Length: 135
Image (tube, rainbow, N blue to C red; front, side, top):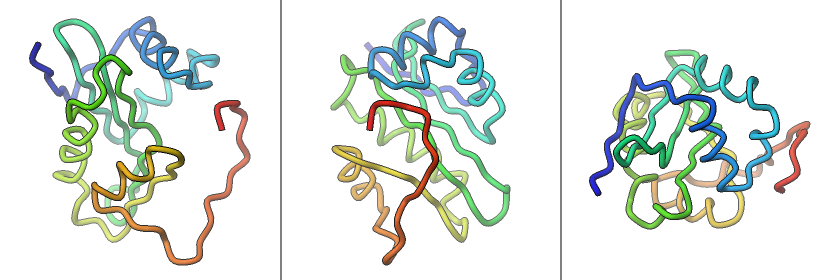
């Protein structure tokens, strides 16, 4: 099946929860906050296999210098097909010229982002106050 990326598609709450739950992301435990956060992102790119949401990525930005990519998800059944890379390529079309692009990655995601051109930020360390449980 062909995967279609969409820029202005707003998935339903049930579609979002199915994707986040399939990946075990704790954001699924806060469904309305998750939905509102994604809908209010500067950019939300979704990936669809027919009418099934199979991936998404979002960006938060000041619109000029800095962009942060908080979420990039691809359903486990669709991983390894280049969907995440396509979403990042679409983000680069919009933000590639920005002064600073930021992402926090761990586990297997680190290598994915390295392939997308991200490098460790000197001696900086990611820091957070986090209310999740998957890390």
